[in-house]
Image 1 (cartoon, one colour):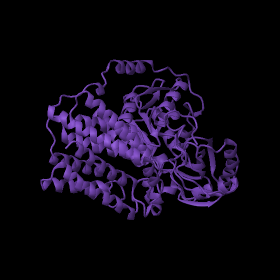
Image 2 (cartoon, rainbow, N blue to C red; image 1 turned 90 degrees about the vertical axis):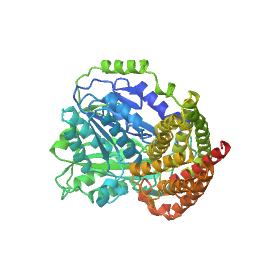
Image 3 (cartoon, rainbow, N blue to C red; image 1 turned 120 degrees about the vertical axis):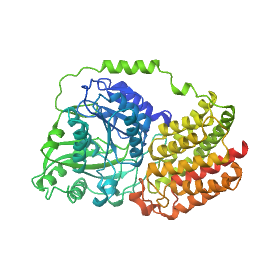
Length: 583
């Protein structure tokens, strides 16, 4: 378990602060993460990676020459927000465009995609690439749905080495695609991980058993087997990966591979070496030439007791990039000439931060009517934060049935931050629209992950509909909820029946629109719609998930409602209470 922490909610921020203090030769802090402390040649493509905290040395430990130009760092097991990614990418950009790289998880896909849109709007040419190497999370016919685990490293490195050779953005992206298509990983675990402040792991493994095919966010494995010896574990890992070769590799004999035996947090290095001796022998027996193997902790999951094996099948070009030197806090290879610190860009960034007036300290002009409506908005967000806090443990338990168990934690972080930001904006005299949009940004920043992106979208849609000029009536609120429903479906790609929050959001929005069209007051219309939402959330228990981290464990979730759907239903009922109080 995680023993050394202060406030669990501050763990990721404090860990990043300590990391940057310890590694100033390689990195400097910027809003949302870190960038290289050394100068980047003008015109070079910036490779910006990122993901949640809890995986060190991924992702901040991989920033430095030969590897990433910057890393956006999210909260524990939660993707960084689009604002954080945009901030890091802007600081890392050297004029050659930006390649955003991340593991293939719904929250990361949403936030990095939004960040790419913002960068493009700024005039920065941007591409994205999601690593999807975990063969246990989907079959070969659905490889695009696979998770990104320890295969992140060789794919990140290939792209970054290509960027340092001066290749243009499209060619760097093609290198990433080639490396990703030739990378496969598979993992096993003997115990789950425990998040800071939690008193139990996200999943457990029965004594004398192991979980097979796990992820790196506390998701349970896709199956269980008897506890193996080290040699038996090695054989399982190697034989599983050799069963699925890249399309252009007919036989492993005579092929070259970059090999990573990765510890997930609490397996000791000596244990890894015992396993690796057999991994190397088995690959040798299969005729595979091992190139620059890595044995150690490279992508972890807090204190999870587990290992994963990654094979990247090399051609001449990928081998050149894999062997290329790198110098980062946590990953070093070969030798590089001494580099100059990036004093110019660091001083410009610092000066900009010192002279800029934070947007949070000012509020746009608003009418008295809108400021009055902001009172109700603030009360509603307070009710949201309180109901989420009261049910956070329950939401975590529901989520842990087939997911990673962090939905309650993320919702608590997001709702608390949203209420705090809303209160600050309200104190500055902001209107209802601004209060909601400030809350939206705070929720997305602090929660991260899929729920952070979607709840940020919901609040922003409502804020846009309400605005800061007029007193919003029931019809306008219903319009905002309808807009939010459409935006969430567009952003996340889910539809009714996929076992997500959409299964509640759509009928809630439809019921609210119908009730307001009948002329009901906002409180009465919301009451009717909240009743619909509660029924819809209960109905998700009979569905099988078709999206998100629960999808590989679909059968396990049958009979349990979706955590995101359940939390949305709780929130709609809590908001109704606030509306009654401010009627």
